[in-house]
Picture 1 (cartoon, rainbow, N blue to C red):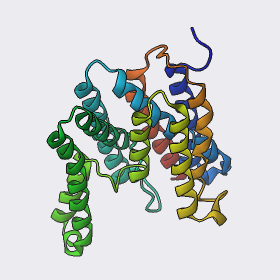
Picture 2: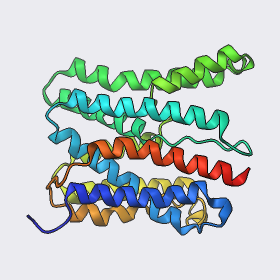
Picture 3: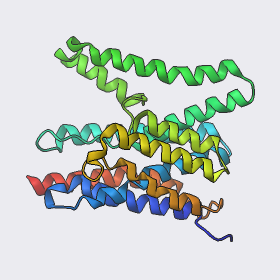
Picture 4: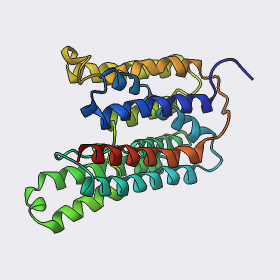
Amino acid sequence: MHKGMTGFQLKVLGVVTMVIDHIGQFFLFLGVPMWFHWIGRIAAPIFLFESSEGFIHTSNRKKYMFRLLAGYWLMGVINLILNQYFTIDHSIVINNIFGTLFLGTVYMQACEYFKQKKIFNGLIWAIVPIILNILVLLLLSNDSLFDSNLGIIIFQTFILFIPTLMLTEGGVLFVALAVFFYLFHGKKQFQIAALVIVAGITLVTGGIQHAFTYNYQWMMLLAAIPIVLYNGEKGRSMRNFFYIFYPAHIALFALISFFIQR
């Protein structure tokens, strides 16, 4: 075994930091300190990095992508139930990293087609998510759509089944980062450079003066350390664990938070 961290160890670190972040999210009213969120910034880049590794090494990319899409659907249904029956003071649960991971693999596949000189296929895979995103923008700009229960149901159904660049967790920047991790596979210096650039964009666009209050996403830079330490080995498999644990812990935290505050 080579020195450094295996993919399994990276995922464990991602899960632990994610849980810390979500404790801060759901139990802020109990006085959970801000630095829980700072630590939690490590999680998303690790999962994005691991999604690129998974896409490259999986024996069946279609099944891999479908698992992510199915995870998005499952988490969407859970969010819908939580927001309908288990929220207080108009708070909403929108956690669904599966959508980001899925869209990242969509663009990884587009890049694969371009590498194979299958330009038409690559364009289709690259353009369809953009078209769907434009459709969401058009729906959101139609105020009359939300004047009726039917219109609200149509919109909710659309976003429940179709992850879009604008509404997915982390947005375009996170999807792009996943793709950069894929494109620069095996070139740690470029992968870290991409992480630094994305973190820098979030810092500048969110307001540097708020860097340690609500604009702390730039602290995703800390994920550079475990990514650099990654030794290229898969380690133990925890695929099914993550697909179960992610929605389960979100639902559990949301329910506990709800009943404490009642």
